[in-house]
Length: 554
Image 1: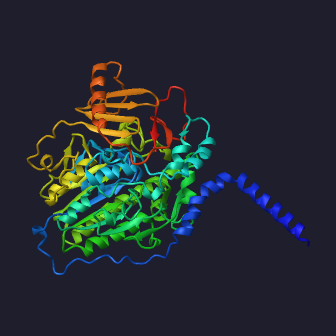
Image 2: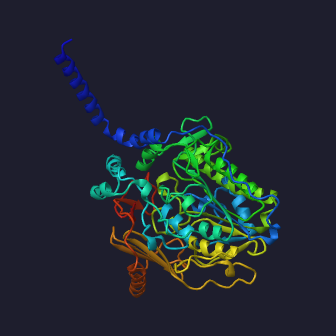
Image 3: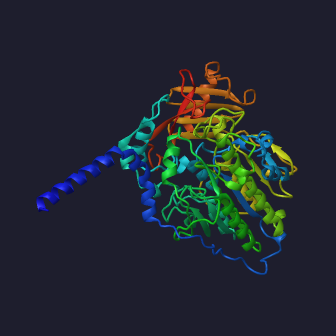
């Protein structure tokens, strides 16, 4: 074969390969992040975590030590996903007895709010007690490459409002790992560590993945860090999957997420089992290892976030539920409730339950993109919106002898209140000169509880902003240009928009919103995607003229 012929065949082959890649460019884009992850972060087989062991004998008797502190955070768990607040799926065999029991031992916050309707911003608020836009955390970290994929993914879907993508901003966005909470922020882990606590993080972080932004540099002595997003490998015999083909983000997650964790910044390795159960196993080990000294455990579950994957054992336990997607989702809820029960049992077994303050909540409401309509019932809206369904979350706490059992708190509280409350319980202090937006709730929870003072609560996501005070709530959107005003005392499910009937109140609340945000710094990174979110429909339901919606900025 002549050299010319060889070159000609090579060029033909290269052209065919290029044509094939172009024809399948969406597939290449969809899978490229996963392929990159496999190359850059190979995962070792599972191995035991060498948790640090506390002292033997105890530093002091349990009752003479500051209280241990455990925060259990679920991901995307709606208020109707638990039976604690009067709803739930108990009639379907998927109640939440462990979360209910925790509430019965302490307080149920009937108007408990996340500080944001999306994970990163809400988590930054929880850990600092501050509105995250005070330090530039306003949007969800998103890889710039997502802009290219999103344009293709959403282009396939008819019957929806348009998606707006700014490709120039996407090209200029920082590396995904650089998007997160600045290390200059003073977290509850840092405050408790200064008080003598051993501090441990297990699970999701989503506040940056550089060495400076990871938990070890934000006050945690140890971290078992969720590195990607599968609950089990997709082809595991121990998992049951539910894919939502109507959700473009779900179509992106499945080919790109992996099953991996790391300990203290080391090599990725595979968890031993279904993720919620694995995290709980490790949390129990942490409790046992630190039973003789004060500890802070931040157990941040990935469940019930998509991709929807249930352990086969939990799925099989709900064989009477015929709808596959719903059955998988409710099975995932079972794993979170079981985790709460096992953590509480570990505290009792180690003689720590009477001197441990436990908080359970969710980072935001459940999303409409899973296609299950009653997750936030009876409230309107979903994750990514500022309606009650996106913000009102399961929220309970227990501390024997300090929080009255079977108590209810009916005033509006936020996860920004967790930071000052836990610090007060531990005798710790916030950083000097730093404004903490949350309130210490302890004076309002004991036997001699006093009413919470009147105060505004604010929410922010680009031009979408909201405020609530004294039962009145205003939501202001730029796309569409609209205001919603609700009296939550008379209309807790936000059915009647009173903006037109109360123009003076709208004006006062808008002025308060503007004043709050006037001195805030610009965001640390810009949003480049705006997604339409229907208020009253799940994502699998087509948009119809007249449907109410807002836009979420990533």
